[in-house]
Amino acid sequence: MISVAECVATPYTGSQTTKDAVRAQIVERFGEAEGAKYDPYSNARTFAQWTQLGYTVKKGQKALRSITYIEKKDEKGVIIKIPRVVNLFYVLQVDRV
Image 1 (cartoon, rainbow, N blue to C red):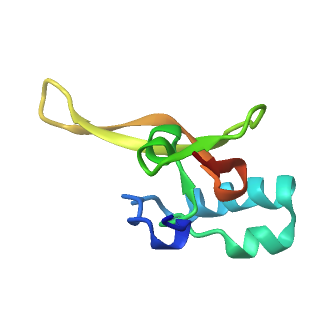
Image 2 (cartoon, one colour):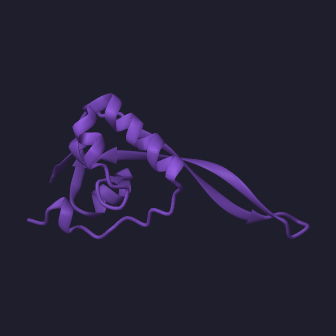
């Protein structure tokens, strides 16, 4: 069985602000100790990413909310950033299938 630590890193490219916002949600739900363990590259993933790795989200778990920005060119060629909400689940919220 593959452990979460052995899984491929996530494609996280967020800012420190985004990382801190997710960490704050983890601390609120699971405590300071888990907040200190938070690593956006390995233990917080989307539902689809956990499923691909053979994990399932535990029943009743609520997602952590994060924001990412999608860059898109408008008709004038100017790059605009569009905010997109990303729902993440922390490692304590999943079980191995």
